[in-house]
Length: 206
Image (tube, rainbow, N blue to C red; front, side, top):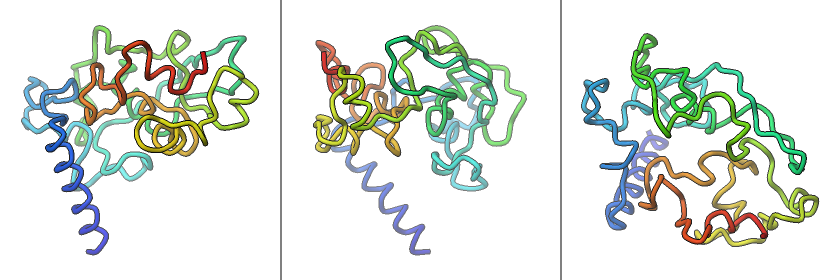
C-alpha cells in the first residue's frame, strides 16, 4: 500500500508540475484520445494501464501496448566510436509504434489492430539514417570520440549533468532527446529547445 501511495503521490506531483508549467500531453502529438481507433477516449491507455500491465517490459511503468519484435538495421558509420546494437530499453517501446510493424491500436491485449503509423512519424526498421540509440555514452567515449562532451560533468540545461538528466542507465535512448509526455512543450516533443541546434550542442562538441 505504501508503494502505491508513493507512486500515486509522485504521479500527482508530476501532473501538478506540468499544470503549473502549462505543458502536458493533452493536445500534443501523443494525445490519442480523439483518434477513431481509440474507442476508449482515454489518453494514457494506449501506452499505460493501471491494471494487468505487461510486467515483462522493465523500462515502462504499467505498460499496455504490444512491443515490437522486429529486427532493426542499426546506425553505422566509420566515424562512430561507440558500439550500436539493437534498440533496447525505452527506445524499443517507442519503436513499438514508430517502426510501423505494430499497429497503433494494439494495446490492452489487442493484437489484430489495423491502424499503423504513417508519414514523418514512421521511422521503420532501417535506422541507418537516424540518430544512433541504445549505446553507452560515458566519459571514456567522450575522450575517444573527441567530438562529444563528458556526460558526467557537462550541464544538460535541465539542472543536472547530461548523465543525470538525458541518459538512461548511461545510454543514449530516444527519450534522451524526446519527452513523450510533452513536459517541455517544445516542437516535436523535444526535451529542450533546438534553436541554433542548442539541443544537439548539449552533447556534441562542435
